[in-house]
Image 1 (cartoon, helix red, strand yellow):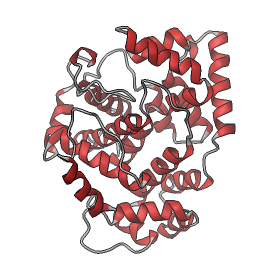
Image 2 (spheres, rainbow, N blue to C red):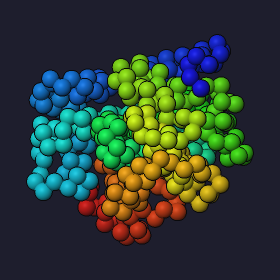
Image 3 (cartoon, rainbow, N blue to C red):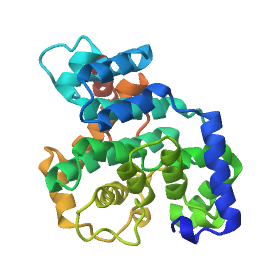
Image 4 (cartoon, rainbow, N blue to C red):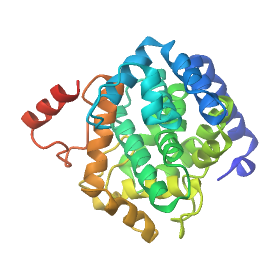
Length: 319
């Protein structure tokens, strides 16, 4: 479904959701500026560092992540300018945008939908997209990570503005064999990919990011990995194939997982990571631990980080 196939009533709902979201959850200026600076290759490192340093909470998160085992630098990074130099402008932008979006949405609790698992899925998709982009050269890895993390942002807007309809969608998914897109079409009449793309446009995100959000639910798995749209759509399917669903835990329910084969380069990219998908999950949880300052909930059957005592040791190490 694209904008041109949405009828008048549903188009109005799409416009209303986006308008209300931007009113209720305005994106921090620091995030918008960080995007614009990192897109401009002429921007100086100091310019991006100055923008991020204006937000103390974001600065603390960036430095905490930069000095963690997530990146593994031997020397300690003591300020934002060093982080930008060592990690790169686009990597710092990715961290900044992800952190700001996670903090921006204050959402109602919806029975049957875990906000922890929403972010678990999103960040894992970002990391898988980063790995695919690195393997295929179809997009810059940092850009693929950002697009992967934000691909489902439309769901947050729908949950914020239409909590009852969102709850009805979740109930329909749990009680039927419908997937998310099918249930969403029945309840909302408009898909989260369209909401997310329109919201990203409103936030003045780069066109490539807007397109990847809009196109992350293609009619079938991309046969080849050529564009960032292919990268993000394939990363999303790769995570869903493992049961790492958005807001729901299908790790024990194979009937809920997509069965269509992915392009060979996708599995090659994941296999090239030492430890494969489980390592990417570990890294996703570590990322969330640093940018949210709390241990995120995870998929029940995955046993990420091993037993509870091992998890406590990890938390102490990276806190």
